[in-house]
Length: 148
Image (cartoon, rainbow, N blue to C red):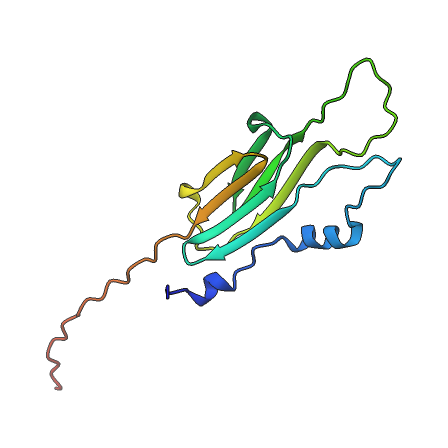
């Protein structure tokens, strides 16, 4: 069994505001209305770090960016759906356009070692946990005290 630091396990991995928007708006297709596309994400954590998997079907590698700022992972980009140039749309259900997802990361995240891979429409981002700092313990000699 691997050692896990309690703060690492209890760290928030979702953005409360994003979660609230998801619940309030539902992101259910609203036919006839303009709306944006929001990729689904799954977030996993273990002793080695946090892994975020985002569904990005139809998104090309050059159309997605992954950034980290102040322990917030940002996945953003643009999804472009193919549309025949000379045809009139009769029904549109595939959402496209710009998207953004934010994931709050634990303070122990190692931002210098993040990896990201887009393969078959799934973006997998791994944010490793920073190695625990060793606490240096040294003995401090005490001199003799004299009482005068």
